[in-house]
Image (cartoon, rainbow, N blue to C red; front, side, top):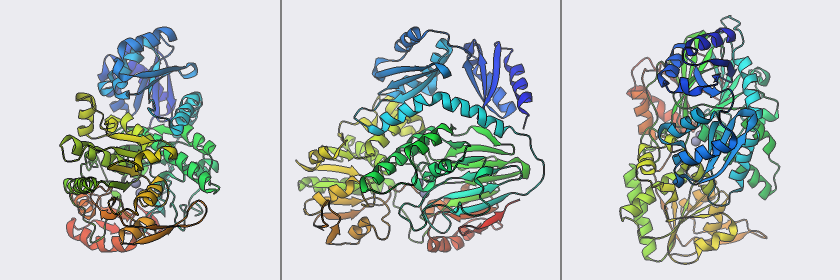
Amino acid sequence: MYAPDQLKRKVRSILSKYAEIDKVELEGPFVVVYTKRPRDILDSPDVITTAAKTLKKKIVVLATQPLKEEKDTREFIKSLIPPKAEIVDVKFVKETNEVYIIAKRTGYVVGKGGSNIMEILKETGWRPVVIRAPTIKSSFLDTFYNVIIENSPVRKRLMKKMAQRIYRPRIGEDRGLYITFLGAAREVGRSAILVNSSESTVLLDAGISVGGRNPFPRFDLPIFRLDELDAVIVTHAHLDHSGALPLLYKYGYKGPVYMTKPTRDLVALLLYDYLQLSERVGITPFFSWSDVITMLNYTVILDYGETVDITPDIKLTFYNAGHILGSSLVHLNVESARYNILYTGDFRFRDTKLLNKASHKFPRVESLIMESTYSGETDILPPIDKAEEMLFQIIRETAEKGGKVLIPALAVGRAQEIMVSLVDGFRRGKLPDIPVYLDGMVYDSTAIHSAYPDYLSPYIREKVFKEDKDPFTDPHFNFISSPEERPDATRGGPAVIIAPSGMLTGGPSVEYFKLLAPHEENAIVLVSYQAEGTLGRKVRDGAKEVILPGEIEPVKVKINAKVYKVEGFSAHADKVQLLAYLGSIEPRPHRVFLIHGEESKIRSFIPLAHKSTPSGMRISAPHVGETFRLA
Ligand SMILES: [Zn+2]
Ligand SMILES: [Zn+2]
């Protein structure tokens, strides 16, 4: 790695052939070049790519000062962006030369491959940031976007500070390379893996175990030192991977957390929802919204395929994981040990309508850390079209009887997978023309999905950009934004209702369950894993009556509605996909660590994995707290 001054000089000497460079700054892991004429460099795009390749750095070109007044910039944006983008507001942040464009249909603001964004920067000198305007009332999105806009100057200052730590001189001693599993080993929940190299300490995921006996990772172990932590990397937004993030900041961590942009938005949503829920049920949460804001200020956004230095001896690259919007595989190149680690987080190894399957080709991989949620003997999921066919048939039959279909689903991921399938069912005439109601956080989560078409499957992108049809805004969908609107969904004729939580452990799905379960014309369709002890599990196992907490006293709910289990919409790789991944990952790792799965499942999977992979691959099932030396 170059020393900071050497790096700045190198960048300057390469780019000054194209434009006069005012300054080169290191901001977080990025090299930011300031020039009065960004167009001169950006119009020859190969220059940046070549420079980035030679120096192995992400280079960002910005204008030293705005080239146009606010008024003229506003006008230019209006003339460039098609009216169907429905721009709601344009806000300027002078301290950072940023212009926030808030629009209902952000795809049209960004333009194909980001062409409009580039044009705004080149022409006006303001750096555009695009934000999706909520189309119905959303207290989360209002709060969140204000935080993002207001804290922009703070983030800029922190990025410069973080760069100093990334570009510190090396110690140069060989201390080996170690990984320690702080959670999610022989269990599902509280994902956290510590990586200690000769020069640095990095944490992969900081999750909690929602409702588990041990909610937090083993941050109490002596090997974990918050003051030595260089970076946190988050694979995806689910709380079992991100829920402990605010806790780290609450206890004084002052370093970067790396994630993709959609993951940032979804993490904020899930943490916001966690706080709201805690307030409603009267428990004191272990963090506050101000801890979340601190976390957001230290968040460094990284795209798939961008490689950056995160410490003096570790380079990080994200790859698509195919699990939920923005989910990533984490690739670490540890230079001091000449060693490469691939951590899957949660992943899926087959395409769906919503997402592409996980990447499986990498420059180098010595150790693979793989999730194994569905590694059990019977964990074989049916093909997605079979699952869809079954769901459509249930909806058709229920509608014919005049009943309603309740689908309890996770608000992030599962709900959108099903929405996309339903739109296709309506289009192909496989579904009757009935309304679909979406409750709770599904609205905010869907809004975030539709803001990032570039992270979704080619199928969705095609619909959005070519056919001008965003499947998430299909006219069949009705978003319920408050409990007062719920009767709209439960009165009247046949309908489909999608509501969280997926295991009927709380949230609007339970309220709908109370209203719909007693009537035999209705149907309850379980599309998610139903954990032991949850209401969803009881319903799945055929309970005829359940007692639920009510507002004043417990209520008895009779279950006369038909109950169905539809598998195949899972966001995880099943046993077959896990084996296929081990068989097709390139290059072949020589060590595999199986985590994020029940002990019995992993035990039955290991002999299978040995059989279907070349000999010489060492497969381990670590325990929580266990440390392994890799090099
Ligand atoms: Zn997940
Ligand atoms: Zn997980």
